[in-house]
Structure formats: structure tokens, C-alpha cells
Length: 119
Image 1 (spheres, rainbow, N blue to C red):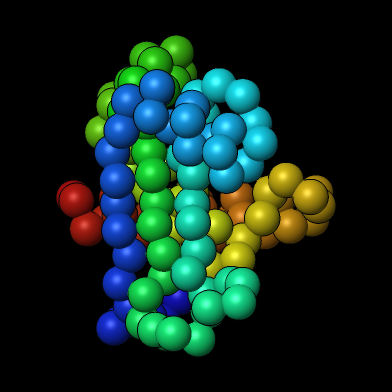
Image 2: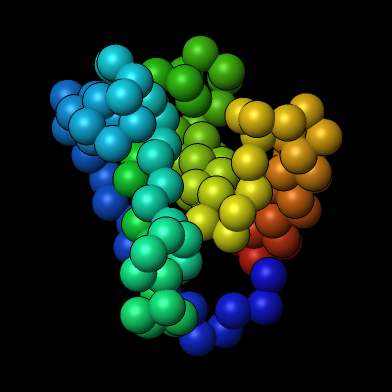
């Protein structure tokens, strides 16, 4: 992804907080697992090209999803961080099936890199 000088914020919240953000900014009700707020899109995207944006993760949902999938909370958290970062880079899985496949492939590549780093 080649952004060695880029910055992003990771924010860890509970379900109540992410539900508020989800409704306020995305017009969706209830909690979700991750929301990304890209800073390289929109009217003010050129202000600081080194700031990618914010990734907000609900730790309540993360733990619940991890348990349901038989994954550790840490592994599920890693997956959500990767997912959120991909959204900051413009990857999208919602509006197009082909884009969803591309995003999933990139996510798998990034998770493999993390696995190699943690081995």
C-alpha cells in the first residue's frame, strides 16, 4: 500500500458509542463492528495528505464476533483493523461484488503479512 509516512487513528469504543456514530454519520441504526472515516476524500482531502483517517472499532462487537466464529478477540481485532484500513484506502465491499472480492483478497494478503510478523 506504500504509505510509509501516513498516519491514522485507531479508536476503540463500546457498542453504544459506535451505534451513535453509525446513526449520526451513516444513517444506520445499531452497533456495527468497524467504521472508517477517510480523510483523503471530500472537500478537505488535500489539507494533510499524510493523514489517512480514523478507524473506529467496537470492542463489544469484536469480542462477540470472535467468539461466534471461534476466533480469539485479538485475531478478530486484527481482521477489523485491516478491514478498516482498507476502507481508508478506498476499498469497498458494499456496492460491488467484484470490489468485494478484491477487498477480500487484499485483506487475506495483509492478514498473512501480520501472521508472518507475529510468528
